[in-house]
Image (tube, rainbow, N blue to C red; front, side, top):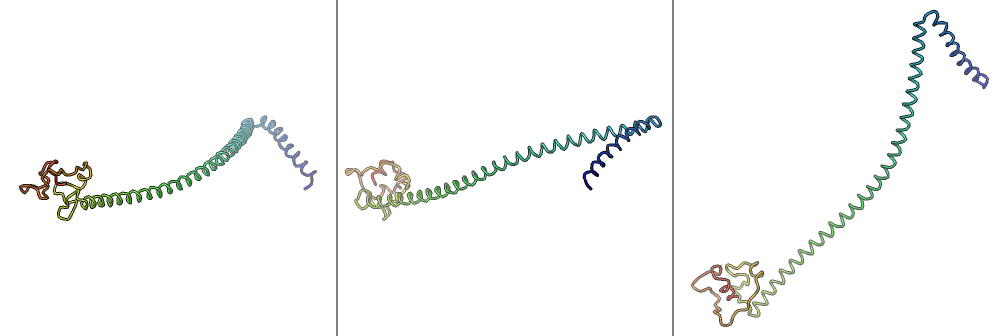
Length: 183
């Protein structure tokens, strides 16, 4: 098909439409109801075509808007994933530091316990605290935590320093001053 054929096809389409308009005018004289129906159908088709064009334009606009939004959200997602990775690494590092600090605390507690025992052993060795039944922590009613939480008093040289409680009383029944005399 060459250019001459395409231009004749276009002009023939126009001629058909124009002829159809002339035929419609003739038909309106012969059968006005049919002509009116044909005209209404043409108007309805034109409105439908216009609606379709508007709908297509609106869809194209929405596609453009959604593509822009998708690009923005993709960039935000990348940033959030980077932040999440950073926070995950920081959390892991903090957990490791916490474990190390807990281990240090346990070691410090064990060292403190060992030092307390050594202090007690040295006090017994120097005679500052009498050794009862070979165990420095066997204090009858005195508990280990009470022993270290109260200030220590040196024994009064003039006070009675027997290692057994008088009259068979237990250490827990003695007053604080009486129990301090045995330290």
